[in-house]
Image 1: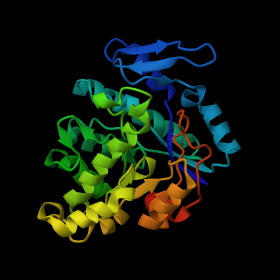
Image 2 (image 1 turned 90 degrees about the vertical axis):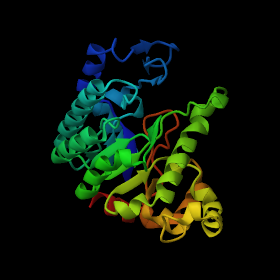
Image 3 (image 1 turned 135 degrees about the horizontal axis):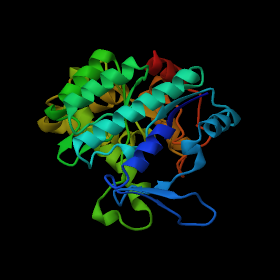
Length: 311
């Protein structure tokens, strides 16, 4: 079994965080006696820094116990650093990518990795993606856009042009939703995270970006958010409104099958619906390990999609 959605923080990245803790407002906070410290970045991206996030030996042991033969490791979204000046984002991207490349080189049968890029400067992001893949990484994990730019904007074309040339995996992973209505009962995570994916995925689909950059392997986290469930509404809009259909050559439900999706859904009926909607060759096993809401071990073998992404 593969795990396409899992996260790790290498030792050099931790050192970087400690060296730059004032610049990025990094804090290690003890919240509960029976839990590890919480790492908080910039006063908002807090999470429990479990040992499996930072201990490579423990990570590989847990992988083996769960029956996972190969993991595609990604940087954690809390360390995308899009809120900070470009030099910070660029510096950490390079440290993270080199560290993951070194780790995966040591255990290539068990690990592959995606890098992180300074998305706030798409030209630099393209350069860092190129460097990362030269190091042996399979592509990059990115957020669902920036405060003032959707991923379909021409602003990001330099990044997607390079990803297309390299046939890179681009794993789109949301950050916590900052909608002020979702401040209670863990809703920024429970529905805000898949909502951010839904907005991004819908925009990319309707933009026709996959026609312009057909060789980019776009993977959506958490089963594509709510988009697969509402694809009928998009198809109806395609029939009714030129604003929906103008950039597409087929109905949205056909474009849905041109992306990839992970299995982080926690519900077998939802997973079966996703597979039926997009095809078994477009769904990869994922866990989101070791975050609190991980599906561990990941669900489903689904080797067809794994091969199509890693080849």
